Length: 203
Image (cartoon, rainbow, N blue to C red; front, side):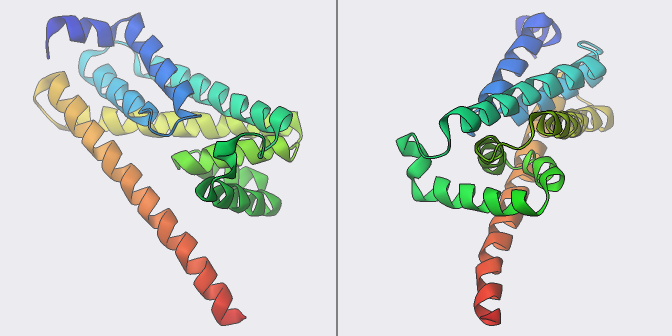
C-alpha cells in the first residue's frame, strides 16, 4: 500500500472519513459506510493504528447519529412530504417497517441496522410513529454498537488470518463485506417475496 495512503488511513483523517461515510450511509444506501468500517478494522488489526476499539466506538457513534437524524426527519416531516418518499419501492419499504415496528421495536431496530434500505425505512417510520425517544435512542445505540463491532470484526479477522500486509487485508475484507451484504439482501428479498405467497395460500 502506498505510504501516503497508509498514513492517511492510520491517522485521524481516516477515522474522520469513516465517520462521514457512516453518517451519510444512513440517508444514501450507495455510500459505502459498511466498507469503510470493515477497511479500518483491517487496518487496525494489521497496523495497530488506529486502535480497533476506537474504530468500533467511533463507527457506532456515527451510525447512531445517522439513525437519529433519520428518526428526526420522520418525526418532523413524516414519510410523505418529499417525492422520493412516495416512490413504489420506498412506500413498500415504509409499509414493511410499519408492520414490523408494530410487532416489536427492539427486534426490528437491531435487525434492520444490518440491511441498508431497511434501516432507512425503519428509522423514518419510528420517527413518524413517534416511538418514545428515550426508548428509541437506547435501542438505536445498542443496534449501532452491534453493527459497528460486526463490521470492524470482519476486517480484523481477515487481517489476522491472511498474510500480505494491509493492502491484502483491506481488499479481501471489503470483498467479504460486500458478499455478506449481498447475501443479507438476497435473503431479505426472498423472505419478502415468500410472505405474500404464504398469505395467498392462507387466504
